[in-house]
Length: 332
Image 1 (cartoon, one colour):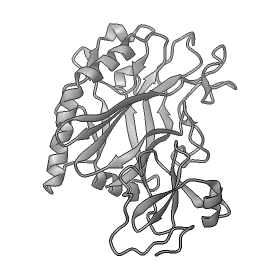
Image 2 (cartoon, one colour):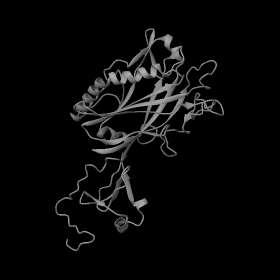
Image 3 (cartoon, helix red, strand yellow):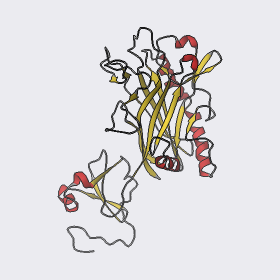
Image 4 (tube, helix red, strand yellow):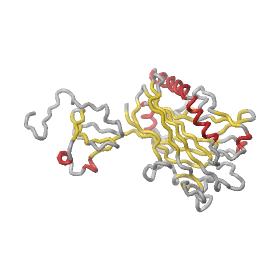
């Protein structure tokens, strides 16, 4: 088992969508990103279910709440060949943010009996939320089917059966139906809609893409270079040609976190001020700053901050045969 950090680094506009003739929603494209995250056990139980949504990114003229993105005007607007948040958006240049890339999608522990599924969807903003609300309802109703599909993958991986294809699976590849279909008439209205629609008869369907990782898969992904650097996974969203063949890429990154458990390591969890020192594989609480200074004169540097929950399973009793002495006591 190991801890991983999965982030959304940024995106690239290969081809912008067909925009409103009068640009009532802003110049060129305005988009936001929704991410559905689930941790699923081998039994099919959903251990964690969460969702995050970015701010709307694009033209900020008359829309001060938006995040400036794109080069169509001095105030933004995403057009063909734009990148966000900077050139080569897969190569992080700054700190993580809360409402726009680069942003964290999930951080936690994976095992071979537990998988993480991340389903990002990229939405063109037009001001009507009906379709977006339907998307949320579809994720809820398809939850059990998604979990069962992941259970099948976990079982195959544990049995040593190689999976065909890569670690990004579409709804169809998971054996599911499209999460919803849209009529041509609906697409002509001012409504938020997902980018990546394909033609199905007279209508259009949206086949979501899901990143699925167990411990082994995440470890391999973090060490692999798929063309944009170690751990970076490109997910492409492309509309049918009848819709203008809009195309975007999202760049996700998988990183394996190192949690040092060697003797003398000083650790604290991100949201907990308690500092522990490691000896014999066990954690010992350091209850005061005076005691902490006996281990280091620079706690802001030498205390390693680890993810919340990372120390929950660290023993409080050291391994057998370890020799210890308390600071204030002579007996060994």
